[in-house]
Length: 213
Image 1 (cartoon, rainbow, N blue to C red):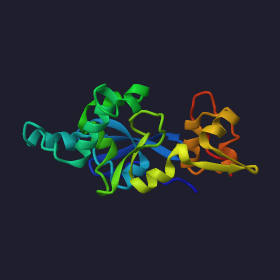
Image 2: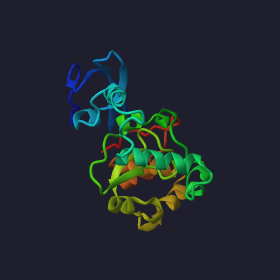
Image 3: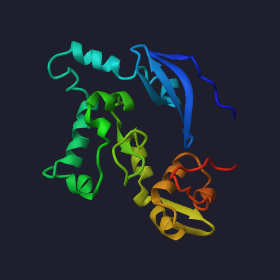
Image 4: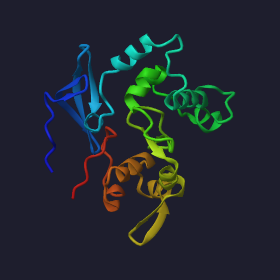
């Protein structure tokens, strides 16, 4: 299916300038904000309304709010504080599951406004922040708002994959094929057929080609 051209289309304060690259099944577009800043966004986030500005709208809200930025009572702010604590504070009870095993927070997410602009508002009280790759960092492209039920169904540690008459966990298939667990997980998440997800060699750049169907 041919991708829809969104060149010069407006999304809130953003105007799409040009297509930049494809990451898995996602397309990245460069946009110009009404404030003059240029920034890349996932096309899907532009179309579904999650990305409406370069972040200046949020910063403007903060400038008009009180000294604590007026967003400290939001669930998004509480989520942001919690993920930073468990990754950066050795005294946090969950630190050994996160920062203690190398999970970090993307530098740009040191700023709450950037985190909120990248992730958007939590869709519902049932949603929490999930990392697509359980061994990956809290970073743009590796996180999404997801319900706890869906998170439980997606846990790599409990996910069994049947292929060629054998059933193994994702990690076991990674050991068997030599393909990194993160690569297999992202391929399956992006809709790859199981046979291709487990057999197509990963290219040296770490980016996966689209499945050949």
